[in-house]
Image 1 (tube, rainbow, N blue to C red):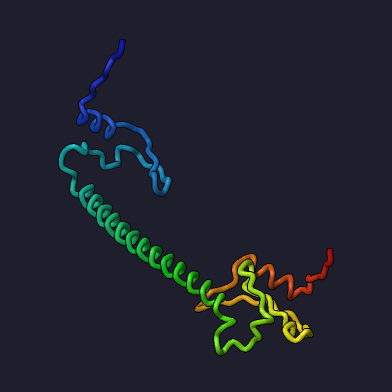
Image 2: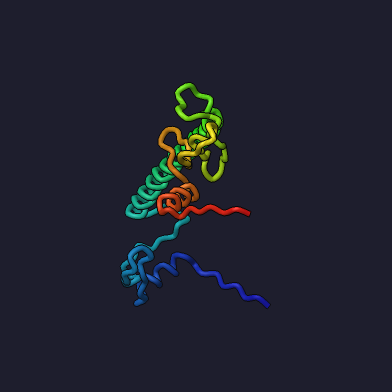
Length: 165
């Protein structure tokens, strides 16, 4: 058997206003007597102070929503621009050896794509390799990714070896 207890909200508020109960602010954690709180029945008109706070919170909510929409637009635009730049970069790295200003001998270049774009065996086309260059092609403000930096660091640290099988 269920027993439902219906309380008159007005009498509950009056009772809390007369009580010696202590409440804690959810924002700052400070404690205060509940009798000092602005208690009201939210089904009717708000007291002036509560209405001011409600309007302030609504304004803040609108500002945050507008900010969120703007950030979402910027993120989408940035993602699209990055995708386009990556696509262009992948095309450029493939056709770079054929470019008229490419000052390396295309026959000395070996395209890898990942993790770096190519290895240049300077002189291999003349049967005399003078040096080997590990190369990555970047466009715009693109930077090396994690794996490319690791390859660069291993080369700069002379952590490169030759093996025959």
